[in-house]
Amino acid sequence: MDAADLVASALVLGIILVSLLSNVVVLICFLYNPEIRKQVPGLFTLNLTFCNLLQCVSNMPLTLAGLVTTGHPGGSGFCQLVGFLDTFLTTNAMLSMAALSIDRWVAVVFPLSYHSRIRHRDAVIALGYTWIHSLCFSTVATCRSWVGYNYIYASCTLCSASAKGAEMQFVVFTVALHSLTFLLTLIVLCVTYLKVLKVARFHCKRIDVITMQTLVLLVDIHPSVRQKCLDEQRRRRLRATKKISTFIGTFVVCFTPYVVTRMVELFCPGPISPRWGVLTKCLAYSKAASDPFVYSLLRHQYRKTCSLLANKILRRRPLNSSSNASDVNATSNLQAPVNK
Image (cartoon, rainbow, N blue to C red; front, side, top):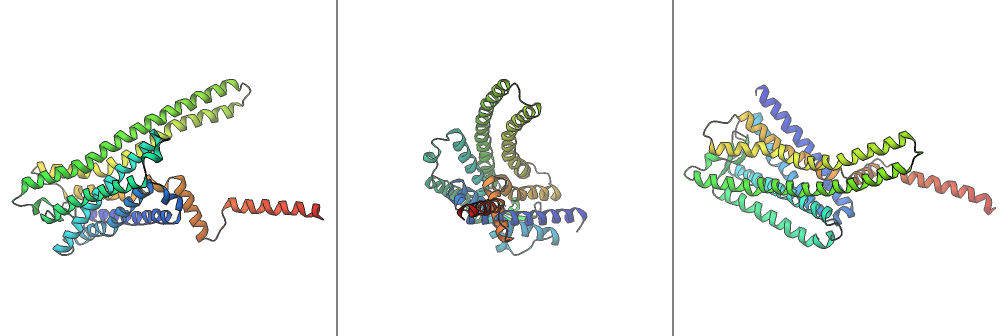
């Protein structure tokens, strides 16, 4: 192993560890908190977590083994199975992100009619479509023997070398796959989240107007309090932009290099550096490590559940319960002399 392979192996190993830990935490929070299970987005998050966990135990370890051994790990049948999972899980994860963005768009743009528009039945239908869509592409690729060990990406995935005699069909299939998954998901993310950002900025403007009117009326307000209100006003405007940028930005940064490299591989006969191919594959894998934080663990409900679980494991009482207990004890101590 040279230095580049060593760095790539360490990167893949780090992605595996972070992905496993973070996605397992999301799964535990989902199983522990009934409120999360009742919410419709919880089904999409569960499906995304399921895809990420399967990728952590199937595709990522094989890529790590390929980098360490600098060769083809496993037999042909095993590689076919892993290649099937690679296409299925990546496609399913992308479509789950699109479903989450549509759900958030409906929740923000139509808040009063959200529960009548998005129900558990609708979520199950959407998940059924993602599974059928993913199964169709992955099954076709496997049945046509278009998956194999690709040395450019050091993983079992779609391989143009396996499509000898059917090059044009393989090109059409690959273009359709990335157009109906990556490109479609990117368009849905941009359209829905930009609509959400527009609504969020409109509400921020209304709040800013009310805040400025209040500050004008309160003539005797302390300058420090006025400055805190203005700072909170600026933070409120930036908060929505940061969230939307995170949703779209992580998707673009993680998947775009890999998909573009795939397109270049199809239409440009020149060789592609395996180091660049492995780097793009690592970026695609890193989405499984970032998804739990982007869609789950940074939300208040998940952070509260994680805190409760940590207190339960460490056998500590939450701060609210301890303060409530002290208030009850103090009240009983004050009432005791009165009763006497």
